[in-house]
Image (cartoon, rainbow, N blue to C red; front, side, top):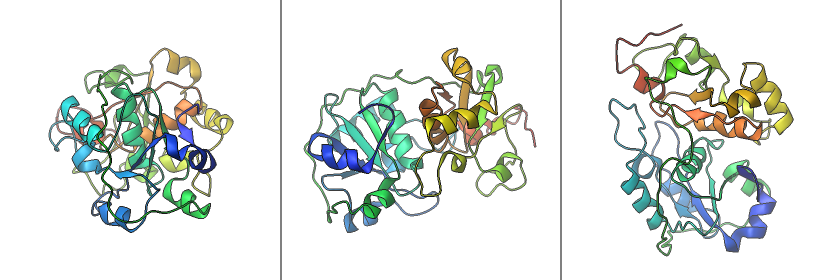
Length: 272
């Protein structure tokens, strides 16, 4: 397997040799444990985004990065080992699964893939389904931060191409259904995550994604220089754009605090 994605057919062929994590989650909705129990990819273990993939809300935003030790324990509990490939999926267009992918990559796991199309694609292709709870054998994953680039609030103004992954109306400040302040970081450009996908919920081709991100100045050359970063509302869905840019050959950093962290300091400027 190469690249950040794995297809349904590839996963079916490799199912016995990978650790599968189910990260079903909906913003503002209940955890996906019930849906997991009702049906999941055989052998998968459930991961709770709020509990396992984020620290409590605070100055770092609504979904700060989890402490290294907490993340390591969570991943060991669901069976992750550094020597075994990991596949993550969700039912939210890879937004939640992307968070797990990024955190594992950031903490040094060498082989992590997102199931392209997620649970919907698996079901559509007639993939086998397992029900009930699971009790995975504990893994031995050792978390070593630093495997993916990040930028903090102080470094955000120096980013050459800062990509806002939220829907256009939130980027423009016309509506803000989640955070107390509307708008975006001054100078940011907007590539909503929906633009990364085809009508059937799969990521667009690398060629299409290169064209999409080149339109906002996020080119391969910029990415290699570390001049591209992405953010969203709380640092979760921005990873969707980071995956798309990786497919396009652009290496982008994550601003984990994102908009919800940016606005915790009233001295930071807001653009609408």
